[in-house]
Amino acid sequence: ETGVTQTPRHLVMGMTNKKSLKCEQHLGHNAMYWYKQSAKKPLELMFVYSLEERVENNSVPSRFSPECPNSSHLFLHLHTLQPEDSALYLCASSQRPGKAFFGQGTRLTVV
Amino acid sequence: GQQVMQIPQYQHVQEGEDFTTYCNSSTTLSNIQWYKQRPGGHPVFLIQLVKSGEVKKQKRLTFQFGEAKKNSSLHITATQTTDVGTYFCAGPGGGADGLTFGKGTHLIIQP
Image 1 (cartoon, each protein chain N blue to C red):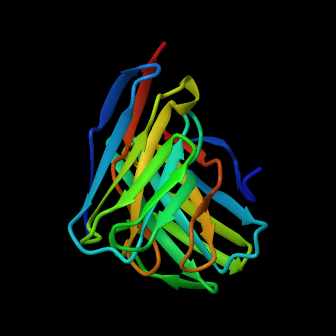
Image 2: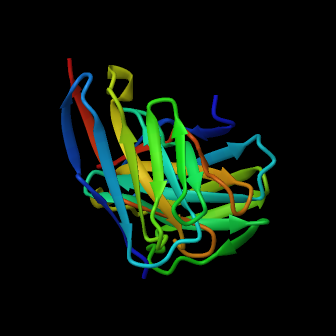
Image 3: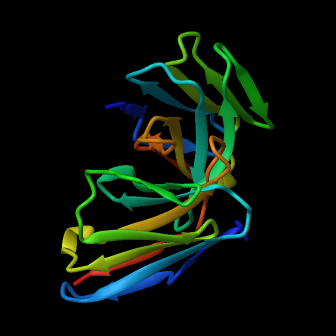
């Protein structure tokens, strides 16, 4: 049990689907993150929420849309994804600026 | 932007041999963190180094932070099968409190 829970653990979606990834942290942290991990690239930071305020990351395509309704929950809304978006999506939380606690990830496959 | 380079990408060792992974940053780091990811798992925090020239030990693991705070290393003495996994270094600066990760070193141990 890491204190950071992600659902679903696995997701297969078509390119025209809309789905959402969910992350919940039980650690009382004040920052939450989405990372993408694929075979060919290192862990890539996608989005940061600090005290529920979003920090833009301009390199992330608009087909990924984060939402942070409160300090414990983080969502990643997905729509019209491409096959190259298939990857492991990891949520993490931290008490700024400390160490990151990762969830177990969502293995996403876009078909 | 900041880059964190890690070598080697893969390291095969016989059980009982030593292992070292090296991390270099393109910029001076305020701190460096190390994570371990087991196969099929998620990154787990190992340690954070803050001071120039700092050396920390965790049982068979020795972590060093360079004098210029731009490089770091992780050394494992007498590897065991439980050490299998990918070791990542990470530095702050991934964009507003996020971490920039190296590509990781995959440690493969042959019994």
